Image (tube, rainbow, N blue to C red):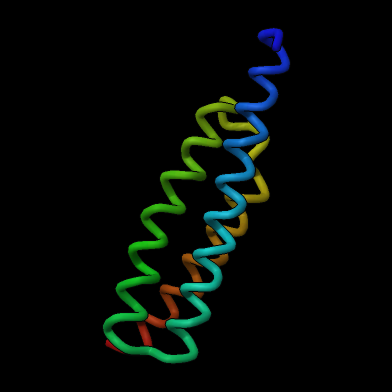
Length: 89
């Protein structure tokens, strides 16, 4: 495989990982919103940390460009989780 194909594959993989991570975060936040308890909120918060890392890696690979959708979805999920935290405290 030549270098440009290898780089393209790695970039696609990083974006795919970020997108999957955002989807898992969405599911975890939805679960916490549906069944708010210490365990589901903690799971969502842990998933948030992992998702932030995945999105930041995508940003790094693309020099801050190309991961806009994942960034927007991450921000949406942070807002959803924040609303849960605020209503339970």
